[in-house]
Amino acid sequence: MAILVTGGAGFIGSHTCVELLSTGYEVIVVDNLSNSSEEVLSRIERITGKNTRFYKGDVRDKELLRTVFSENTVEAVIHFAGFKAVGESVQLPLMYYNNNLTSTLILLEVMQEFDVKRLVFSSSATVYGIHNPVPLTEDMPLSASNPYGRSKLFIEEILRDLYISDESWSIALLRYFNPIGAHSSGLIGESPKGVPNNLMPYISQVAVGKLEKLNVFGNDYATADGTGSRDYIHIVDLALGHLKAIKWVMAHRGCDAFNLGTGKGTTVLQLRDAFVNSTGVEIPYSYASRRPGDADEVYACADKARDQLGWEAKYDIEAMCLDTWRWQKNNPDGF
Image (cartoon, rainbow, N blue to C red):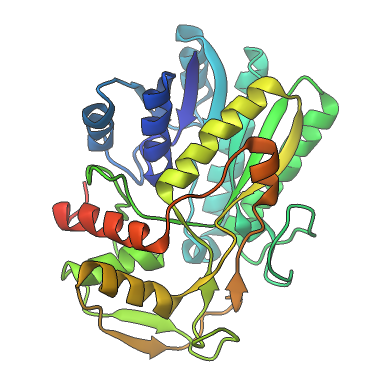
C-alpha cells in the first residue's frame, strides 16, 4: 500500500516517512527541495533500512503528478508541501498564496483524475486566529491573522467544499500546534535555512554556538512568567498522528478536523529552562519588543484526536529538548 507524501523531505514530512516505512507502508515522496535536502532521504533509509521512491519536483507541476500516479498505485496522500514562515508570508503574500493554494488545487485535480480520494492535510493551529479562548477546540470559529494562516484556512474550506460536492472523499485536516524535537537517532531533525523562525531551533543554534543569544519577544504577557506560552509537541508524536489519520481516512468518509497537541502550554522561558536543565548547556537571552499578533497563550484540546483517531501525545518537554540537542550537536550545520 503506497502513500504519497508531498513535501516528504521536510521536517514533519521526513519524520512521518520514517514512521510510515517502519509500519510497513510503501512511501513515495514528491519534494522540490526548496526548504530541505535530498540527504534527508538517505538518512530516512539509514534509520528504517527501507527506500522511499523519490520524485524531485514541484507539486504545481501537473504532468509530474500525473507521472507519479501513473507509475504507482497510490492509496492515499499526505500533503505537507507548502511555504510555512509567518513573517515571510506577510512580506510575500502572493508567493504564499500561489504556492500553497495552487499546489493543493493541482494535487486535488490529479487525485480526482486517478480516483484517489483519501487525503491527510497538513493544517495548522493558526486557523483559530488569536481571539479564541484556550484550550482550542475543533468547533471554534476560524480566522487567521497572516497570509500563511489564511492559506491553511482557505485550503480547509476548499477541502470541505470538495467533500460536499463528492461524498466519496475522505479527508483529515490535522491542525498542528508547535512541533519540536527530532528523531532519537539524531539523524534527522529541523534544519531551517538561514536564521530560524521558530523558537526551539533558535535555542539549539544558540546552544551550538551559531547564534549569540535568544531573543525573547515580550515579557508582559498574561502567563506564569510574562513570556508567550505555546503547545509544544514532539515531532515523533506528530508523525504518529499522521499514521492514525491514514487509518482513519481508509476506514471513513468525510472531511473532519483534528487538533494534534499536548493540551498544555509551555512559556518561552520554561522551554529555555527545560533545555538548559536537560542538556546542561547555558542559553543566554535578552528581552525584545512583542511581535504584533502574538497571543498570550495557545494550546490544544486534543480530546477529539484521542477519541476518534486513538492518538495521544506521549513525549514530555525534556525528551523534546534532549532529542533536539542530540540532532543539533551531531549536525551543527543541518543537512
